[in-house]
Length: 257
Image (cartoon, rainbow, N blue to C red; front, side, top):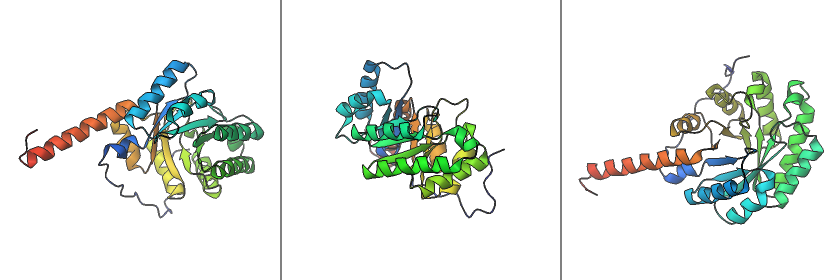
């Protein structure tokens, strides 16, 4: 089934605030450090680089949380991690234990992977109960919950139902994918999720934000967060744009650097 927006929807493409400062882009980026082959030295270096760049959040594997918290705790860079990653097939009790353990250890943002098999089997009550319990745990700890859809695996009607589940469970973010599926999100996916979630649940585009062009595309579609393994390339592109804007402004004002 293709991704089409409900013609009866009252949703209109929102006018996004212009991106003006470095923080407008860097603060929305999330560095993904969930690849299984990363060693501790690489994770350590990447966390420190994210801090130097002012990236919004770093998403680490559960085994790397303590290290990330030591480096980033008390800084503007949020420590995030994952539960039920990457396939969402753990039982509910295991996911909840994993999420609560992450919160206890200092994680401020938890990404819960939906059980795609249960969604495709239309066992919606199972999925909703699981998300609701994780939502309650996160919010009791003043943490953010992101629910990973893995849009490549779900038909359009299931994406719509999952958006509605996220709204009912006070989920903070609907996240497009883990980066481990055969295909990532499409712009149509972003539009669909935003159409259904509106302002109740924010959207995170994940897995394919490697350039400023892709960032701008997702931002225009209504996304608030952007996950990638190469957020530094996006930040560097944005720095260059800002430098060019500043130089043009000075030239227009008759000021030489």
